[in-house]
Image 1 (cartoon, helix red, strand yellow):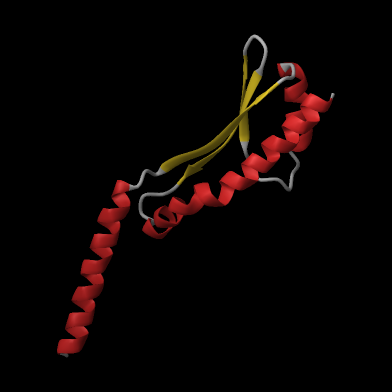
Image 2 (image 1 turned 45 degrees about the horizontal axis):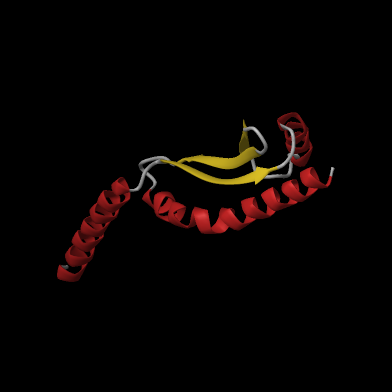
Length: 116
């Protein structure tokens, strides 16, 4: 009986500690990458539309035109429910997982845009 009681109390205490720790992690996360390109914003907008397929990850983009260059920002927005601490803990690695993919897409877009 003492072992069952100890196990139950340990489980409850661990769950409360996990919930408190996950409360520190934000529930809304944005992972973004940006690249400067020598292309017109209109051309980049068209290229981004064609890059996005139904099988691709649902990313968004923002285009910032300047005098000689245009900055393209790709970003993913995640909203994680507060009562799922395991998802919030897993979200710590999202930047390392998605960052290289986004950088690869931006490099391909830059090569395509500056080749035209």
